[in-house]
Image (cartoon, rainbow, N blue to C red; front, top):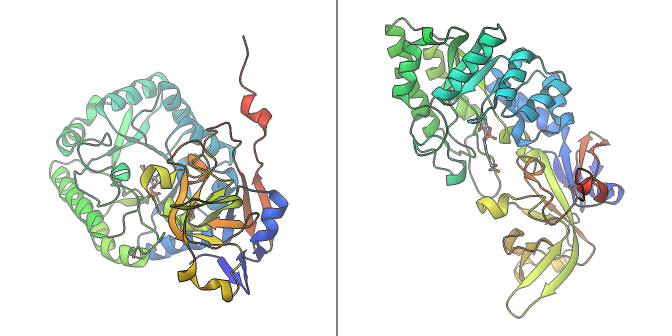
Length: 419
Ligand code: LLP
C-alpha cells in the first residue's frame, strides 16, 4: 500500500499534487510520503505483535534525518553501519538502547564513538573485530554488548550484489568459528556476547531462504544451550522484498506467520532490521524531460536525473516503473502505438539509464516519476559529473516539507583547495 495515486489525471502524493512540487522545488526531486512510511512500519509491527520485536529501521536505505526522526518517534530503533549513521542517530536523539551497529569494517574511532553513545549492541562480523571491540571497551572501562553475525551459507535467491549469506561473501562469521567464540566467551572480558545476528540479503521475495537460515540458527542455538551457553537476542536482519515490477513478494503477514513459530521456539528477544520494505515504495524520483532524441534505431528520453541520482538501474539492472505525472489523454494512450524508449540521464556513461525499452509518451518539459525510489535512491546518490545532489521533500497529508535542500555549485567545491 502506498500513497502515490492518480486523481483524475494527475499524480498525487497523499494530498499534494506532484506537479506542483516539481514546480515549487524544481527537479530532479525526491518525494516521500510520510503516511506510506508509517503504514509500512505498522504492518511489520502488527505482523510480529505476538513477540514484540525491536524494529531497527536500516538507516542506509534512506538516512535523511526527517525520515529517521519520523520512524524513531513512531517507536523504531536504528540499524546503523558507520560513524556517519551513528552521527545521524545522535542528531535525532535516537535512544542509544535502540541502536544496533553492523559493518565488516568498523574503525577504532567508530567503535569508540558507538560505545560512548551506549548503543544496544554491535553486530560483529569477524574475530579481529571482536578482539578490537573488546580492547576498546576495556580501555573505556565499559562492558559492551555484542551479537555475532553468522554467515549461514545459504542462497537467498536475489541479485548477486545484494546476496550476503553465502560463505564467499565478506559478511558474517562461519558457524564453526561462531561456535568457538560462544564457547570461549571468557576470552572477551569486556564484552557481553549475548546474541546472534543474521542478514541474508536484500529484496528477497520468498520466505523459504529466511526459514532455512533461521532453522540452521535454531539448531546452532540449541547446541549452545546444551553447552550451557545461553543467549538473549536473535536479530534476523532485513531483506523483505517489495514490488518494483511484477514481483510477487511474500506479504509481511505471510512472512511473519511462517517465521513466528520458529522464533517462538527459539525463544530469544527478536530484533528486525527492515530498510527497503519501509521506505522503498514510499518515495519517487521526479525528473524533467530535457530532450527527446529519436535516432534511426532507438528513441531516447533524456531527463535531468541520472545514475548519480539513482544508481540502482545501472548497478543492479534494477527495474523501476517510470510514469508521466499526467495521465495521457485517451487518444494518445494507445500504448501499443507508442514507440519504445530508453529513459536516460545526462551523464557521460552508457550505463546512465533509468529505464530501458519503455512505452512512455512525453514531450520536452514534461515530468516523469520514477517509482519505488525511496530506498537506496538518494542514499546511494553521488556528485559524479559534478552534479549537485537532488532536493528531498517529505509529504505529510496536504503539506510538503523540504527535508534536504538541493545542493549548489558552491557545495560541490567547498571542501576543495587550489594549491
Ligand atoms: N541489515 C543489514 C545488516 C543490512 O546489510 C541491510 C542491507 C539491511 C539490514 C536492510 O536490508 P533491506 O531490508 O533494505 O533489504 N543497495 C542495494 C541494497 C543493499 C542492501 C544492503 N544491506 C539495492 O539498492 O538494492
